[in-house]
Length: 118
Image (cartoon, rainbow, N blue to C red; front, side, top):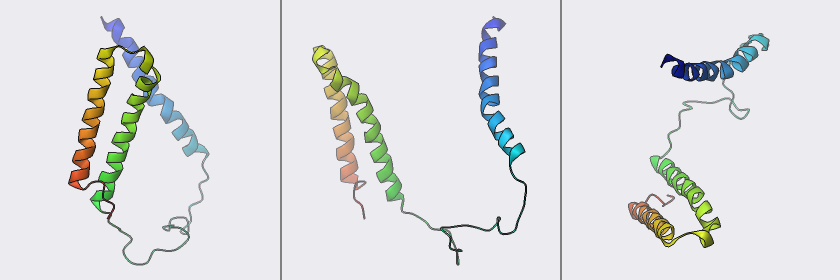
């Protein structure tokens, strides 16, 4: 039984080592010349004046999330559209239900005002 977990342990070990090696190699070969000018905040070549903290409206994030959700859903629609002529009636009805659920989500987001760019 323990033999089955060897592959999982090996996979976890590789998953830790694989990204750690390039990070450590970059840390070893990096130039080490500290300078006060290098530690300054750089923002488009202009030094910041005053408080640099800027708050964004949460509505922009909601708009982006709605876009990402519907963008990912098109990934699910593409294979169905490619094989449309080979599908059975049940499969077509499943995708119609899927599209109706998406439409309901779009109508909900629209009525909540998440698609308004104000």
